[in-house]
Image 1 (cartoon, helix red, strand yellow):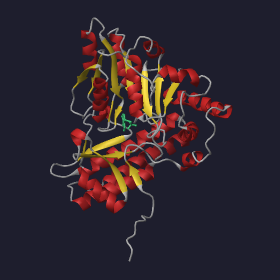
Image 2 (cartoon, protein in one colour; image 1 turned 120 degrees about the horizontal axis):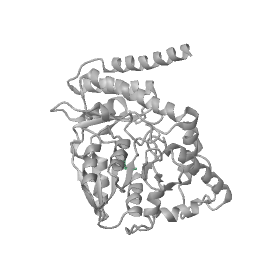
Image 3 (cartoon, protein in one colour; image 1 turned 180 degrees about the horizontal axis):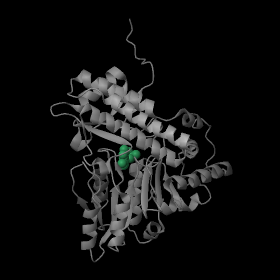
Length: 402
Ligand SMILES: Cc1ncc(COP(=O)(O)O)c(C=O)c1O
């Protein structure tokens, strides 16, 4: 008998991005490629660029590179800074670690505030650095809004307040790769200078597009910034973008998907999208508590609404557990990265997802814990169901009262 490779039912991709691409978006991407120098393309492209502004909540242009989020990181630094410039970053997890490593490679002098990967950015620590910098040598504060490795989400507004309180002119740069279009984010309203994102998480698209929202101050910084940039030059992109064109071949197929994703986000309404993510996250956290397991993020102030990182009890391998879950229940869970490799597993609860999908995922985790002999209490899934039930009841009651 031949060995079967087909696995019935859908694969549960519960990693915190790339997230499953909804079929509406898949279908939109099936359209034929058109001439990217044609007027037809220009009209389509202008609509997409305009639509992106609403997601970032900015009036300024959003820059889009055919790249992954890492490309937008590099562009943010290279377009605004010069070799030897000093910047401040905060250690929230693997993604702050990688961004600061990139900054150092580019010749930037990084003051990286150390932490234990279990909390978000401490705005007070940043305020202290800014207050001490009377000569205004710090050129930027760069933080990761939602560190996908740890499930810690940082208070961007508090960091803005720290800059304002110190009367410090440093640019504020924020990575929103795993938070945009999932939790509230206001590029203009919060006074952020550079916001970077990628296509493959909250925007429900395949990987391949990198986005950057920019303030007037960030655009002004490009005039004096001396770091070399070529492919990632903002100005080389912004000029042709005014007419809907690109300095090189754009990612047309993913842009078709983006147009559809923007429609879907608008149909649901961004506030409803944020509320849905808050609800799903609270269900996942209820399950984690129910199992008696520990959230990698140790302070509720920083809990992420898009990903929960769960610590494995001492002596148990998170990677062996994930492997067992994949083999037995056809579900991919997020791996622990670098410092927490094999110590945590992550559940992604972002993008095109709902209560029943999350309950399926939590069911797979609970069965996996049992199968792997990981010490835990029963009832995590029940706790999540009770949590979702409370949200549903509140909605029904509100509708009845209206
Ligand atoms: C918060 C965060 N920043 C940056 C990145 C890097 O983005 P990419 O892998 O698209 O280059 C990721 C990737 O997962 C991320 O989660």
